[in-house]
Image (cartoon, rainbow, N blue to C red; front, side):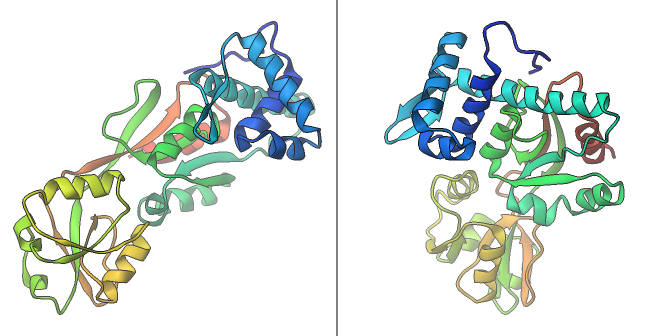
Length: 291
């Protein structure tokens, strides 16, 4: 989704600044502290912006405040405005634009997929600021202009974003080298019957895919762990076996065996459909998608 390069009549720039602070904290008190303003002043500015837009920008979900679709669109617009203003002023003053290029990705992507890209960016003098987000958060960061580019595993490319499938990642089972299964060439769901498994928290996409693959197989939760490094550490300690992305190398003393029962997942490079991205964002996109 592209955004206009100037605010339409009726959108107060001061209110946009206040809304960005509110949206980043989703709390009026903390937003006011960040802006060195009173809480009623920030609330009033967000209320005026809501009236100018003509649609609710946030709503309450239980005890939390969340942005509406309109709020996310306004947030992206406001961030774009601030960035484009900075680029314009730097150009007019003959100064170098020093704003960093923002990349959002998950811990596993940074650890196992993005090393060559990050090294190439450093070699090219590209200044990056890295956001660590899960898949949903990385996509949302691009949509709300909190990141220029994201890398995330998604089942289907979002229609509102430009997306390139950059990696296709399968699954393997990591087991201690002394385990009886370690001598197999590959494993099936039946091979994991009765095993203790190190798994992610309930509700996550990987946990759901694993449970679907093991529907007819009895197994036990050894421990629930977030992140591949901790998961693999538990395997090395003998706590249980783990099914992880096959880009994750097994730790010392362990082996990895293909597990084709779970489908390969595509990791996409994602960005908004902006006809005039910043030079750094354009360069990062090229590094991610070329080759």
